[in-house]
Each structure stands twice: as structure tokens, then as C-alpha cells.
Amino acid sequence: MLFSEILKDYNWEEMGKSIYAKTSRDVERALAKAQTPGEEIDLEDFKALVSPAALQGPYLETMAGLSRTATQKKFGKTIQFYIPLYLSNACTNHCIYCGFNHENKFTRVTLSDEQIMEECKVLKDMGYEHILLLTGESPKDAGIDYLEHAMQLISPYFAQISLEVQPMDTPDYERLRKSGLHAVYVYQETYNKERYRFYHPAGMKRNYEWRLNTQDRLGLANVNKIGLGALLGLEDWRIEAYCMAMHLRHLQKTYWRSKYCVAFPRMRPHEGEGFQPQHVVSDKEFCQMIWAFRLLDDDVEMSLTTRESRDFRNHMISLGITSISAGSQTDPGGYAHPNTEVAQFETNDNRSPVEMKKMIEDQGYEVVWKDWDKVYDLH
Image (cartoon, rainbow, N blue to C red; front, side):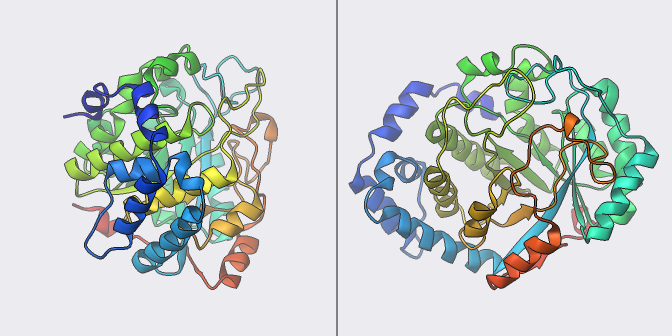
């Protein structure tokens, strides 16, 4: 069964009412289970942990402590480093919140072989081994053939190659696995089907179900690691979080051979008509969401990008996340030749990998540049 078939039985407003109806007693019950060996919190407990009730009294502090303990027990005192590499900003979509919107007037760039290798040299000199390749959604400019070729160019130089590009079909993912694909990240942006088309008025991305079932296609292709998430700021984050949790549980049950990562991108300024977040997520609420996911699942990886402030990222190193980027550029060719005119969004934490490494080590944590080898991707 695909996740779209599961989610269609849930009403957005009813999910919200259920979450907002949770009480302090529900939160205490969930936290008690989280602290009891052999007990696991379920999706109803998760609702309580992301509810307003969990912001009261000492609950958030308790969640933070449990999150730290669970993360250290599973991952040790380590933080994985990765870096995004934008290959193209060509895009057919009209997402009203994104700097790559097809209607935005700036030069569209798709990197040549020479430019790709120029970027790779800069990233290799920084020490990176895990590269996340990104594009806009324009198969004509950066389709399966282009991506396969780019991965074949890059693969000899890096231990891990991940993708964040347009959703594809299962045979395409199987094909890319043969070229060294390690992980794929696809964000639903919002699980609210009624509002989804408002945010995506035209382009390939308008197809809600096709995007929603991408992780199922990835599971069928036996991709090693699968990432999911929502763009925080579009709709009520508490309902988005619950849908993400349902999605994660479905994937883990159905495609148990794959590993999973949850990401939490919060809205940042972008070029265009000045779209601003409709549902602002505070730092306190953001922490609540991250810690709720850690208590739901101590195996899931969680990443934090340079969208966030340096102070917030410093604070979260020991409190649940497992991977982080540093020195990121969000424009194609931006490492060798920075050009913020064509960036997807503005970064907030502009520290270099060296500076981030020092901060992490000062907290008693170890930076992991490589946590996987290509040989393990052969199922």
C-alpha cells in the first residue's frame, strides 16, 4: 500500500483537533513510556509531544534530556558533515515560496563537466566526503541522463553521494544506484492536500500524489537511505509533524532494509514576490518538534541546515540532531564562483567547516566526514 492511500483516510482539520486536545496527562503518559525500558511511544503519544500541552511546565526540558540521552546512546557523540552541491537552478515549477520559481527573472545555470569538477575540487579541499547534489525540477536541463553522468564524474572523489532533485520513477532510482547513489531526500513541502496546489500553482510539482509516493518508489528501488520532511512555515507545523511521523512509520514497516532521515527546513527569505511564512515556527516549537521525533524513533537520522542561526545550531549539537552542513552555497557554481543572485535561499549560518568543526569539538563531539563506504550499498 502506498502512503497516499493511507493518508487519504485522514482529515487535516480533524488531525489538528486531536493534537490540540491533548492534555498534560497525555504528555506525562508519553514521557513515562519514553523513560521505561522496553516501552515505545506510539503515534498517539507523538501527538501529545507536539501539542501545546507539551510546552507547559518542565516537559520540554525533560524531552531535551531524553533526546540527548537517546541520541548519544545510538549515535555516540558524533555529528556527520555533509555539503550541498547545486548542479542547476533551472526549474519548471512555480512554487510561490521558492527563489527558483520559473517566473523569477535571472540567469538559469546548469553546470558543465568542467564546472562540476571545479566545484568538487573546492569541496574536496574543504575535507568533505558526503556530497548532496541538488537541482531545480527541469528534466530537460537536469534529467536522469545528466544526473547519472554527473554522479559518474563525482563518484571517484567522494565516499557518499546523495540527491535532492525532482521525484523520479523506481527504474530511474535503480539506475542511479549503479552510479553510486547512496541516499535521496524529497520533501513534501506540505501534507495538506487542499493547500498544496495553492503553493504549487503550475509545473511538475503540482502533482501531490506523485510527490507523496516518492519515498515508496525509493523503497522499492532499495535505496540505502531515504529522507523526508516538510517545509516549516507553510501550514500548521504540528499537523505536518504528525503526518511526517505517520509517513516515517509506514516506510519503516514497508521498506525495512532502508535507513531514514528527517529534515526540518524552516522558511528563509527568497527572491520573488515576497512570500512570507504563513505559520511561523518559533525556536522553542522547533526544538519541541525535533525532540518529539527523537523520542518517537532513536534510529532516525535528523539534519539541520545553514538556514538556521549559528546560536541555534550551536545549541542543538548535543540535543538530537545527527548531521549538519557548513560553508554551504545555494547557487550553482557557488563554491568556485559565489553568486547570490541565483541562490535558492539565503543561508543564515555562514561559518566555514573549520569553524564548525571547532565549535563541535569544543562541545566534546567528534565530526564524522565519512560514515559509509560504497561497498555497503550493494544489497
